[in-house]
Amino acid sequence: MSESKLSGQFFDAAIGLLRRVRDEESAAVAAAGTAIADTVAAGGRIFAFGAGHSSLAAQDIVYRAGGFALANLLPVPGAVGVDVMPATLGSALERVDGLATAVLDSSPAEAGDVLVIISLSGRNSLPVEMAAHARALGLKVIGVTSVAYATETTARNPLGSFLKDHCDIVLDNKIAVGDAELTAPGIEAPFAPASTVVTSALMQAMMAAAAEELVHRGIEPPLLRSANVDGGADWNRRVMTEYSDRIFYRH
Image 1 (tube, one colour):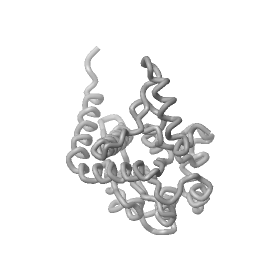
Image 2 (cartoon, helix red, strand yellow):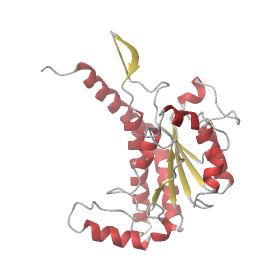
Image 3 (cartoon, helix red, strand yellow):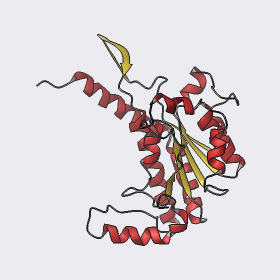
Image 4 (cartoon, rainbow, N blue to C red):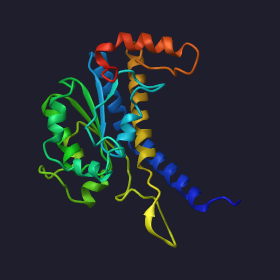
């Protein structure tokens, strides 16, 4: 069987984007890492939110080997993944005004915590309202988005703005509007989205920067180990007990 030309093109596109965010977003990644380290050192908590496929990158830092034990998912019922039926309901919920405020006000997030909000377009009510309300509550907001949408599309929320306009720190994943890297003869629609690959890499780079900053301050990063290696489960019990008041996915 011959190699797939299109699959190779996707790898090339994804690698190009990863190199671009590495080179162009390094200062923002470092700033995000410092903000997270500041929060950890001060006794605060970390929350991450994303709707639809953006939730994949948020989930990627929560309760996983090599990740911070006190990274918590901030879920919005029906908007976290494609398991809601019908799947189109999730997209509709992103446009509901007031939902983000209700979720935040009933969550354990509070002033001094960090909230990472992931939204590729950053144009819908849910991520924009969440960022604006979180900052009003005194949270530090890190946005992970495609800044291109702010110049190539119109805002779709009552504030008339984009996620990037309500963040303390913005990480631009450089994804083109439409989130499809490939076109080919005989295929009518563009295809092969790379936003999950690139956004997850940005999230992990940000957490690596946070771990590095904590070590510089003489603080052990609150990392989990794989439960599938010898001693991993015991390690995790110790870390999760130490940080139990800052972990919410156990309750």
